Image (cartoon, rainbow, N blue to C red; front, side, top):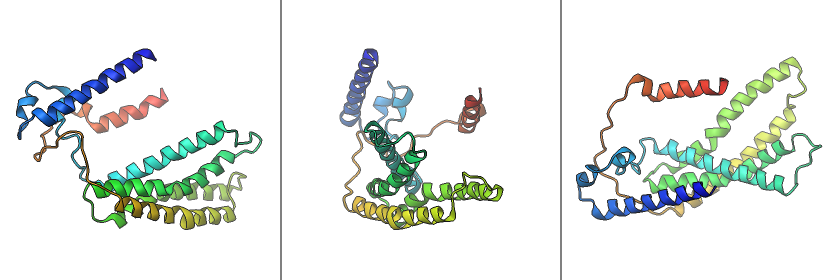
Length: 226
C-alpha cells in the first residue's frame, strides 16, 4: 500500500508539472514541446478535445455517475445492516428504488457536461440519458420474463409487478431526470480544461489489424472463458 501511494503521489506531481509546462511554455503551434515528448504526452493537446458525439458521451457519463451513486448507496445500506439475510431479493428491491431516486444525478451530470461542451439540444440529451439504460434493459428483461411466463417458471414476475415498475420509472425516475437536467443546464459554467487544446487535430497514424480496437474487443471477450 505504501508503494502504491508513493507512486500515485509521484505521478500526480509529474502531471502537475507537465500541465504547468504546457500552459506556460507552449507557443501557438506547440511544436517546441512535442520534440522532447513521447508516448501519451504527444497527444496532450488533444486529450480534452470535445468528442464528435457529445450527446451520447454526456449521456453515458450521466448514467455512469448514477450507477456510482447507486452502488455507493447499496454498500452503505449493507454496512448499516439494513438488509435481512432471510429476505431474498431485498437488495434487488432496494436497487430498483435507488435507481429511480438517483435519476436526478444522471440528468444533472449529463446536462451540465453537455452544456459545458456547447450543446444546444439539451432536451434530447435528457431523454437519451433517461432511456440509455432503462430502454435496452427493459426490452431484454421483457423477453426473458415472457419466456419465463411461457414455461410457467416461478421466477417470472407477475403483471402487477411489471406495471408497478413501469409506474415507478414513469412517475419518479423520468421526472427526476428532467429536474436534474434542468438544474444541470442552468448551473453549467464554461469548460475549464487543465491544459490547452489545439485547434488542429493531431493526425494519428493507422495501426495494424491485430492492434485495432476490434481485435482488442475479440481478445478481451475470450479472456473470461479461460
